[in-house]
Each structure stands twice: as structure tokens, then as C-alpha cells.
Length: 53
Length: 341
Image (cartoon, rainbow over all chains, first blue to last red):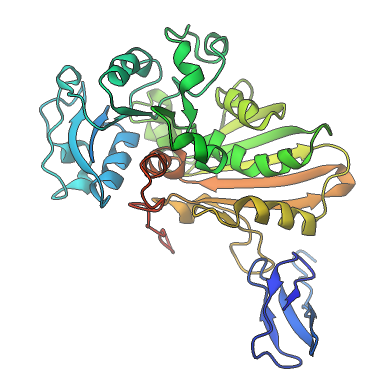
């Protein structure tokens, strides 16, 4: 288990694999698995919105 | 449990009947209406066809029962409650008549003296998220106003964390036309209401008193009517030094509402519905609460959305009934809403 870097929600590792991208159950941020043991995640890179440009 | 609905022909009364008729532990034995006495309930509320054979009775024929819901206009419940309490039942008042603890606030906000100020000390404000334990013992429950509920549920968790640190709130609230009631007058005519974005109370709205009473935050409230039948969205600008960052806001609100059955935190990183919006809450008892940090401006934006007839009135009343009688808090309130709608 680890913590979402955006909202501090508890995030379970379950059977997730290195590089897997999944949404935080609370804030919906796409998280990428950085390590499985110990379990670590970071926000996944996102395409920037360019509305209005 | 046998219940009665007084003032059952209005929009709140209709929503209350819809919920109570579907409640597994409740029998609706009586429903009264002055204007529709003798007429079947479905004449006023066509969605209840075949759900009930109840006929509106004149208010004078009301008999004592286990629980009496008062869905009457503001000012009428004040005179009825002492007699109902004397008969031994529980009273759940959906009007504003017992929401304010200080009698001196009634002339200021409702332009009348309260004839029974002693009951204001006994009445419990019907917001389980703030008063659950008091509600378990209450004889008289005062269901909050719809805009007040959306604002209080959005603001209260942050206000509690501030201690003596100064905080004030500016609230911009939007509401649908059913919040004005069935007899809204000329302002509710289609020609006046269609397409509307109207500041109907830029200052001095009555719910200000409830919000300040329950949050203890000085609040400036402005209310607008918008193109919707149901729904309230309160945008609360909480202003004060050292506001929390987003992650701290998540911690504060998760601690306040993580176990609450009818408050959902909505502040999503992606998708169409990232923040609370009332449209998808029609017919439900949910209040969706969201937030956004704006520390550079010493501001926290808080959002509360609900159905004014649901969590803003009838749904809250049923939730209070469930708490009061030790029933499952979600009994009769399981509707999840519609999407798309």
C-alpha cells in the first residue's frame, strides 16, 4: 500500500506491475507504478490541454 | 411506524410522499392539504398514481400519530408544534420555523416574532452530518433549508479546522425553480422563468442565518435562479490567511465525510463531471462536495450540490427519521439518480 501523491488516498498494490497506469480511487489522477516492492507510484504523464490557443 | 404529512400538496410534500411510500418501515396513514382537501394525492402528484389511494384530508382532521411531518409554508408550523408534541409523537418540521436557535433572528429574517421561543432550544437542526447524536433523542427536528445544506456541508469541515484563525465566506448559490414552491407567483411564470439567470436575493437571503449558526463563519450569501427545475449549487469562497493546499483539503474532507452515506467528495482529475453538479443528483439524497485550493489569493473554493427537494428537504427529513428511530440510515433513500438526464 502507498499514498496518492495528489490527494493522499490509500492506494493498494494488489497485483499491479511495473509501469501499469491506473486511476486513484478518490481523485481520479492517473498513477503510474514506479516500483512494486516497496510499492511506489507517481502521477502518469498527461497530454496538456490546449483549448483556446 | 405510522406517519402523517401535513401540507402534502406542495412540491416538498410530494417528494416526501414519494420517499415515504417506498420506505420499508413506514406507513403513511394521513396526508392533509387545505387547498386540495377531498382530492386524491395523485391529483397533485401524478408520479404517485397507483402508488397510493390516499386522499388529502382537511388539516383540522389530523389525528395524533407516531411521526408528523410538517411541509407547510414558513410561519404555519410555529402554532401547530406545541399541540403535536403534547400528543406524544415526534415532529419533523420542513419549514424554517424551528431552524434558528435565537428567537431574535425570526423578526430579522422572517419578519415575525416566534410565538414559542422555548421550543427553539429543544429543536435539533436536522443535519445528521453535524447533529447525529442529538437527532437520536429529538422530539422536534428542524430540517435545514436547501441552500443552507449545500453551503454548510461544503464549508463546515474547513471551518472546524480553523480554530480561532479568521475565516469568512462569500457564497454564490444557484437554484432551480422548484425551490420557490408550488405557488411561486409571477416570478415562476414560464415567460419569466424560461432561460432565466436572475439574482433574486443578492444580499439578505434568509438562509444566511442558518449558515452562520451552524458554521460560525461570517457569510455573505447571494442567490440566483437558473434554468433548472431541481438543483442547488453553492460555490463558497472561503477567505482567510494560510489556506490549506489541495492534499490537506482531501485529508480534511475525507476525515469529515469518509463514512457518511450521503456526502460524496467530487474533485476528479479528469472526465466531464470533475466537480459537483446538481443535475445528476435529481431525486437522490446525495450532497456532492468538492473543493479547490487557491492559496495565492488566500482563498479556498468549496462546492456543494444537491437536489433541493431531496437532500435539501424531503430526503433530509427521511434521513432524520431513520436516525431518530435507529433504522438503517439509507432506508427508503437508495435511489442513485439518473444519467444521462
